[in-house]
Image (cartoon, rainbow, N blue to C red; front, side, top):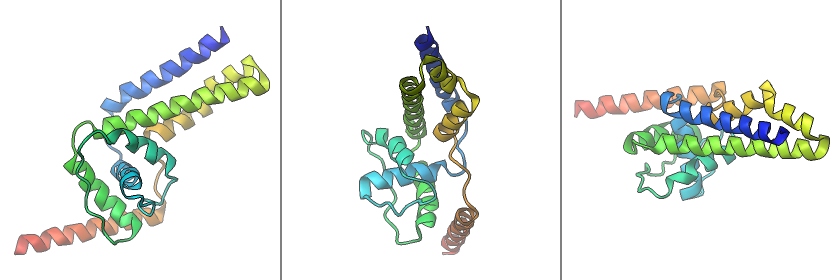
Length: 178
């Protein structure tokens, strides 16, 4: 009974994530995270997007390989500038199911973590605490936040993003004058 309740909670959690994936708009830094994960896989360049650890980025970018994606050329900029400008270009040139697939991969990872949490707590403390661990608001909130909404950027990252936007705007203005 307890195992069934825990599985039901995890299935409901995944259903909520999947249903929200299509309805939610992009976060401001989602392109940066998806692009940096793709750069980690394709270029082995772990210098792109150093703001957060790479595991979830790698998982989110893994289902993108079957598609012929157009990645922006490697630039010799600071990692955050390349992440912001490359992420924007990556999303613009690869519209379609790119974001959906990355979000689904991240949500499945969150479900896997929920199952592993249940298993670990069950082995250490028994069925009751394991069910409470899965049901606890903090656990589900942290998993949902990690899977769907990336953490807010640090002030230095935001400054780099603004500098990259200003640089691109100046470049477009220059191109328009020629």
